Image (cartoon, rainbow, N blue to C red; front, side, top):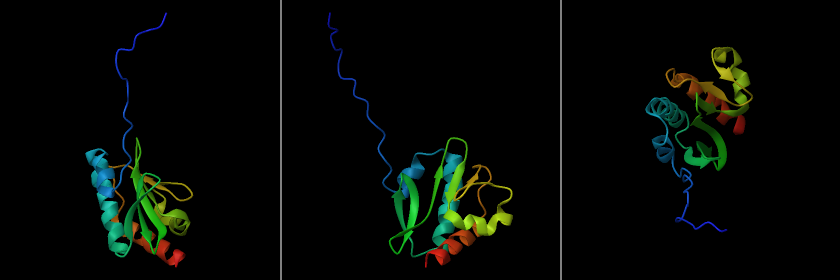
Amino acid sequence: MKRKSTGSRRTTKPTKPKTHDDYLARVSADKRAALQKVRSAIKAAAPRAEECISYQLPAFRLNGKFLVAYGAAANHCAFYPGSVIRVLKSELKGYDTSKGTLRFPAEKPLPATLVRKLVKLRMAAKM
């Protein structure tokens, strides 16, 4: 016996963020505040970089090439400066790092000076 449909069960997929502001509007207030600080520091270090979305994360491109990205996860925020992390290994001892990622809790945002330093190292490595 066939069941009768009780109506449409369409579920809408969440739309992908199209801008940095769109992405930030979707995260919790504490993570948004921490990520806004990272965003501002990136803009200060690379004023000519353009904002974009890459792999559904807020990112920056410089001269058409990926520069850095940032984002929020369930239990932390992250900054993605790439392999330049190894250059500042000693300054990053208090942070959870991997090959190209720097993770930090929202309640302890990254210092702007550290973000600017990593962005400048990244720009020097890319040029």
